[in-house]
Amino acid sequence: MKLYILLLILLFFTACSKLGSDFEITNKRLTSIDSVVLSNGFNNTVIYNLKPNENYKAFLDFEKEKDTVISDGSYSIQVYQNKDKEQILNFGYYSNGSPSSSLRFKLVIENDTISVNESWD
Image (cartoon, rainbow, N blue to C red; front, side, top):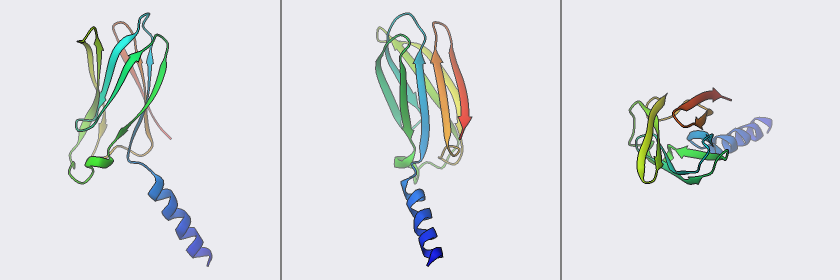
């Protein structure tokens, strides 16, 4: 009986886990940013009107493509201002179409730089 309950608990936690990466984006510019696009090459997350010193949390999903994408790749961030692409940065890495477990990125957008801090839980 104890084994049955343990199996149910494990099944619950594995069924509830999402396949993807968490991001925290911070605008350290003095002005708002029109939009920021995060991508893993097959899914995008778009953030509009990121105000100065604002933090935004996002999740980039790998679930939709996990059966078709079995390649390695990297993430990218594109920063747009006045509808022009201002900054582009490729960073991080995923393997066989899925990220490392519990992967988190903290991205800080400054006037001339985008800094990336990668961590695992």
